[in-house]
Image 1 (cartoon, rainbow, N blue to C red):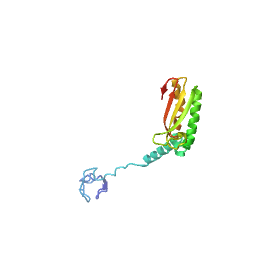
Image 2 (spheres, one colour):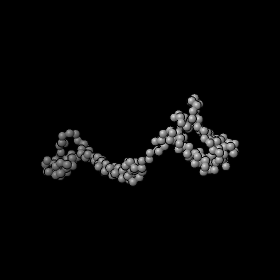
Image 3 (tube, rainbow, N blue to C red):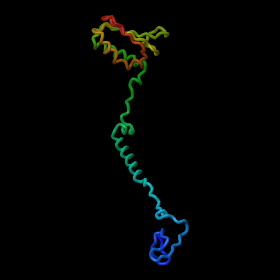
Image 4 (cartoon, one colour):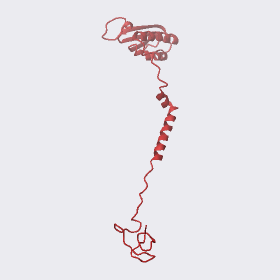
Length: 180
């Protein structure tokens, strides 16, 4: 807005003649623009502060909620897996445990006439297979009351077989004439 130079009446800038005194108006520097186009206020920008604060608040809430769950336990180092006792065994110790577990399982199912034969695998010297450090074959000759009881004998010893380097296990049942 500007004032009329003659009568000091406020004008809007689009009048050619002052409505109060009738004086012809002289345009100011620059070209004349229609009403409302001469002054344009700057459009407001986006205020990022609320968005940043909400994002930070959500991240804090996420970290706090994770602390109570399994992710928090992993972050704190809790519930680590216990060391595997089989991994610490030597081959000979694993074979001793395997033999004792087999004897215990065979006795528990009522097997009779049970014998175990440890043989070295093909390509190794003929010797007592149980004393070798390399891979061996184990043959169990027994008489089971029921042929399905073999699972109760063999399944509990399976974790020890790899450490004991027993890669071949043969079980012969003389009662059912079965070979597994």
